[in-house]
Image 1: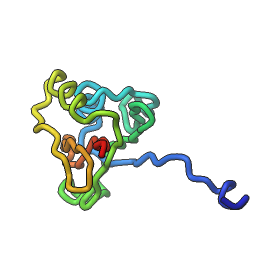
Image 2: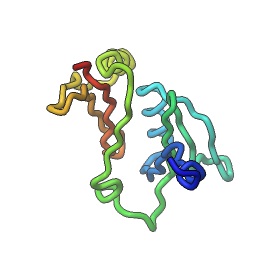
Image 3: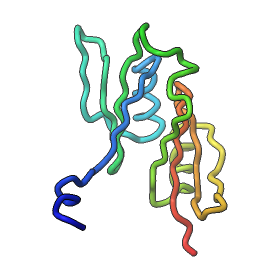
Length: 132
């Protein structure tokens, strides 16, 4: 790796997603998926933006406003893939937290994948590599 490449290392990605009801989304990510609220912005006492984290992953949630795309257009074609240690264990955890989710399935390319939709229809996949 060249000096220039080392100086321009990208360390992580934290997507910002617009949500119809930020309080509902925070409850889903924190209560159902086990994320922790790590930062928030609440002008005039109303939550407008926040960051939720679990392990090394984070998502920023922002209350959608009237000028933005409709709910059906928001996030269209975007899916979020989280690498985890054990998608089966997460499935059990999420079910214990009250989510009705289907069990993970093994993709033809060797990933054990658990798919979940959030309240706004964003597709989330928690996946782990299957040992060869």
